[in-house]
Image 1 (cartoon, one colour):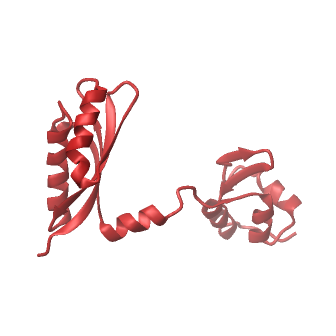
Image 2 (spheres, rainbow, N blue to C red):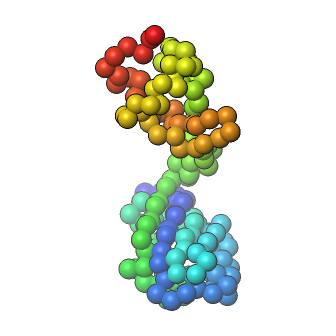
Length: 160
């Protein structure tokens, strides 16, 4: 097999509060791996992202876990609460994907359902209509995918 570069994202809990010096040391150790580290305000939790070279995802996971436990003081294997390994292609696609999901307001809902804006506003009164995820001065915004799914599964026509 051929060695590939894998992208690791790890979340961890620390048995003791991490200091700024701990984080600076970890960043220095991960520098050649393009690493970044973040820590909660109280120093009890953190995350790191960096690259590892390995032949398989399983090997990359083991290397990433070993790397973080050697890099951040006091961490053991049981400190890792999430470990995500991605190929370069997947990591690139993730980086290019929008971080905010596609949202819709009443005008877009009306267009999707083929109804008037007033009728689209009435949909929001229904108990099973998707909840707003953002409130703006122009009105609530909902996830497009949730609204599309709701429209597709309506038992009554949306026209009217």
